[in-house]
Length: 427
Image 1 (cartoon, one colour):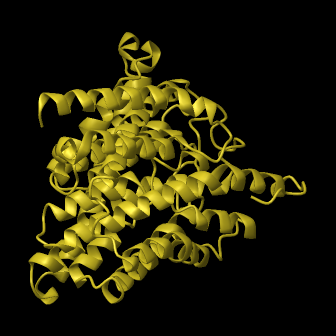
Image 2: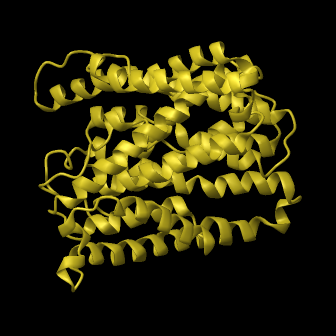
């Protein structure tokens, strides 16, 4: 990258971030969202800078760059999501979440894998990887349909009683980690030979042990941090009393790094850590301070990732996209996820028919998929099919950002009107 290219990148980044700060206020309550704008600005920037200047950050040539940025964005978002949830964790009150994770998610993975192998001509390993990449719903881009933040009323508050927002928030917080075993399944398919030699080890290690380690480490560290923040014996050392929200970021990095070092899933640990911190002194305004800081950083990181993705769209990222690949993305957004989630929620007594339909529809795909694509493709050699996976994943993310972003406001207003017994305006 030449000095001129770097200067163009700085110029494009400055203009884009300035637009990101101003435009959301201008487009409030409209069908255009900030993520859509960032993708568009990034695409225009890609045309201005050109493929040569963007080669250093292109997912095709340097997947680790976008992967690490997406990883950072996701772990910060997971802390924010965990802090935003007021409802205590247990099997009964999280029933909608477990249904989405244990029924809808595996069904969606299976549907994408089968269609990718049968119609998109992917190898079994590539189809499995693509299915895992597109498995998680996004805690970053789905803010319009999720719990907004810690509420002073805690459990029983109006926002927390919104089962749709709670289900989508808690699902996004957990399935970023639960997609990992399926990424490893694809990696093993590509690198380890016959499944008979590794399937039991995959089940015990990747599917059971690493999930247990992540949940355990995150919960313990979060509980210790929460007690230190709110109940430390030396009052002057209580961070909550001093109003130091930066500790939320310290918790993100510490628990993520520790869990990865001991062999667990760091994504799950960060979310579990946030839930454990939130459990301590639920009525404290310190949770709102931490959530506000995390949300600001998440917003900045999201804009950067979307700018890079938008630029990559105009510099060859979609070159390998076929009509079969595009059809797969359309089917995931409009058929596979909605049908799987609808079926999983049929016995969910906390939701009525409209709420089940809305929850099923909003399976937003986004930043987490970029991370998993980078992670899987840097650990396997899938040849030209790597470009196909990137193309399908990028197309699906863009489609989800547009469809779900444009419809979120209208659909949620329709649902609220229906709940209040008003004549709902069609979304």
